[in-house]
Structures are given as structure tokens and as C-alpha cells.
Amino acid sequence: MDANDSPGRSRASRRRRTVLLLLALTAVTSATALVIGLLSWAPDPPAPARPLTVPEAERLAAMRVTNLRDLRAGVHVTAGAGASRTDLVGWVDWSRALLYLDVGGPGAGAERGLLQRAGPVLVTRPDPAAVPTPAAPPLVPPADRWRLRHLTPGAGLAPVLDLLLGLAADRPDPALDGGDARWVASDVVAAGPVDVLQAPLPTASPPAAGSPAPVSTAATGRDGPTSYWLDRDGRLHKLVTRLPGVGPVTVLLNRVDRPTLRPVDALGGRPGLPRALTDAEQRRLDRLPARLRGQRGATLTLTAPVGTDTNLRGAGWLSWAAGTAYVAVADLGVPDRRTLLRRDAGGLYRTDLPAETGGGGTAESPGRPPFPVPAGSWRPTRSARDDLDLLVDAAVAAAGPVRQSGAAVRVREDLAAGRTVDVVELRTADARLRYWIDRDGSLRRVELRTAPGAWAQVDLSPTVVPRLGPPPRATPPSSAPRR
Image (tube, rainbow, N blue to C red; front, side, top):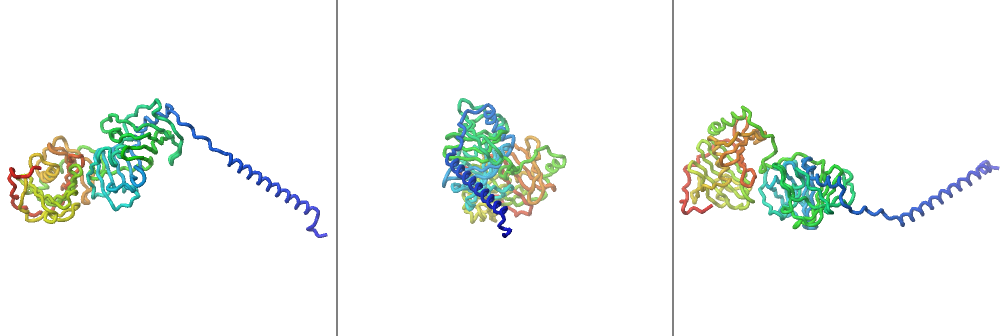
């Protein structure tokens, strides 16, 4: 008999077949039970909405104080829906009431581009050719093409921007009770578990001096309930609401994306630590008039947000030795016209010309004014001078005695034309000024705080300037057009 056909091996084969049969039967039974279980399973119903507990109400009441304490956060906002949706991506700095956002989305329209807002002052950098999908703006903002912008309260993006800045306050909100606030769900976000709470938007309350203004029903209105995704430490991660004239609004906050933001020049530039002048800085300021008279003159470039939606650009010359200035000024809203401004010992005079005869260039970068100084209907500036007059006059008058009200303050160190400068702020009877003085004692920029709260600049480059000749013949006051 063959060894392979032994009785022991036959019994082993029969046992293996029995085990395999039992395993197969077990698998079939388990699969059948799983299918039956899946067909009969139903998820546990969500917990019903309920009034807030005391700890939940306290977290919600302290939410805006927590935001102010955390200083900054990254934001991604979706406002509106469908073809009218606008997306805003960037950062909010609640400690300085500052926004820096990229605006995109299919409904952005003329708002597409970059945006910065400091308190009530808004500047934009339009970019109609930008891709519809927004991305975080560059941490160092572009230096050019910023313009003052006025948004009608309660219209366009104004309610959304008010909402973002209004999510911070220096004191807790009153705790809501009586069913006005409710716990509606638990959820999980990237930062961890959160509670979804439903409550009205905060109402206006008087802020302490220096704190950002709270969101107000007058500014943003309310249109339906607001949901807050709040973690156990009272930090807001998401907000969903509806605003009149805007529609649905979703705000996502990234609590770890919180860089220090740099305002553009029109908003005062990057923050500093103001302090009294050192002895060396005071000496440079005291010697500045004599140094400017020794340099005799400079070319100037002017950037001036001076009124509601009025943004001026200019180029020209000034002579500290003669106390004169001659500038071609373009208004971005009227690109085909130039205003020639002449300043001398007799005062300030203006005339308006077509762009091609008033220095040429573009509205964003106008050319210097023509020589010889054209004759024509030059009109004198009357006693009620505007910010443009004050800015040019301040640049020329820096070579003379400046009548300050109060001590000068060093705001910060900065760069101008590759040179390190001290930014020195001083106040006069007419204006709030900043001088950018390099370490050699040369004046590189004069800034003026304009009526809307923005900063206008005259950048200076010392050079030999042409003689302006005698002052133009002014139109007699009786026939001069009123300004």
C-alpha cells in the first residue's frame, strides 16, 4: 500500500474539510447578520436645541473680548450666493481695527482687488484683471495704486467689513436669556470640538477710548438668526448670518494664522513705538531748515487721498531757496485733465488744462508741468485752503521756521529711496505733519493727515531745479471762479 494513502492522512484531510466548512458557514452567518443590521439601523437623533447653560452663555458673552485679546486672525468670508457671491480672504487685526483682504468671487465686480481698512478709512487697489478666486494678499502690500474709497453705509461690502471689525470689544456683552440664545449642535472644526450656538448679532455699546467700534444694527442690520461655532475657550471659529442687502454671510476664522499686518502709506504705514526725540534727532530737526536752503531745491512726487473718492497724483519741482513750487496734479477720477499749481511768495495759484498740454503722462503717473509756465486764467487760492494746498505749502515751508503746537514725536524708523529715515510727527496750527528725515539730515518725505483721516505724501529728491520765472498773471478776484 502507498504511504500517501495511509489511514492517518485520510483522517487529517477529513478534519481540514470539516474546519473549512464550519468557517464558511460562520462567514455566511456573519454577513447575513451584518446586512440585516444595516437594513434595520437608524442613526441616533441629534440632541434637540435647548437654552444655553450658564457656562455657554458666559463664553458667548465674552466672545468679542476674547477676539480682542487674541489680537488677530485669518479670515475667509463668503457674502451672497450664486453669481452675486463675493469672497474675501486675508486678515483682521482687532487690536488696531485693521482689515487687509483680497476681494474676489463672481460678484466682486469693481471691488475686485486688494482692500485695507483702518477704522472708518478704507483704501482699495482695484485689479479688474485678477482671477475670480481670491488668495491671501501679500504680507508686504504693494506700494502703488492705492486709492481712498468711500462705501455707502449699509450697502455693498460695508456691512460685511463692519461685521468683521465689530467682532471685538473691550467688555463682555450682556448674557442673553429668555430663549434669545440657544445651543443647537456639537461640531468638530480643524481646531477641535465646538458648540454651535444661535443668538442675535451683538448690538452697539459705547467702546472705551482706543478700542474698535462694535458691530451695530444701524451699520449692518440683522436679517435672521446668527450661528456661532465657539470652542471651549470662547474662541470663535465660524459665523453664519444674513445681512440685509447682502444675503447669506459665512465667516471662517483661522486662529493660528495671525501675522503682524502692515498698513499702506495712505493709512499711516507700519506701526511703530512713538517716543520723544533723542538729542541727535532733535538737532537734525532743528538744523533741517538751514540744510534745505543749502540744498536749494528738489523734484517732488505727490500722492494725495484728499476727499471722498478724490485721489490726486502729482509731479513737479520745489525750490527751498526761492520759496516756490510748480506741480502738475492729476485726479484719478478725471484722467484727461491736469491742474497746474504754482506756489510763490505771493500765494498759491491754479489753472486747469487738458492732460496733453498740462504735462502729459497718465493719471496714475503724471508728467512734470510744462515750461515755460503757461499764461492763462490762473486763479488764486482763497483763504479756505484745501489739503492739496496745505501739503504743497508744508513741503516748501519746511525750509523756514515751523510753528509747532507741542513737542515733536519720533513715530518709527523707515526706509525712503533706500535710505534709513526717522519718521518725526509734529503738529502745527493748520495741520498734522510727518517729516521723513534721513541720517544725513535731508528731508525725504512730507506727510499730511488729510480731512478724511488718510495720509498724503510728497516724496522729495534733492536736485537743481529750473527757475520758475515771474509769477503768472492771476485772474482778478471779481471774475475768478469760486472754489
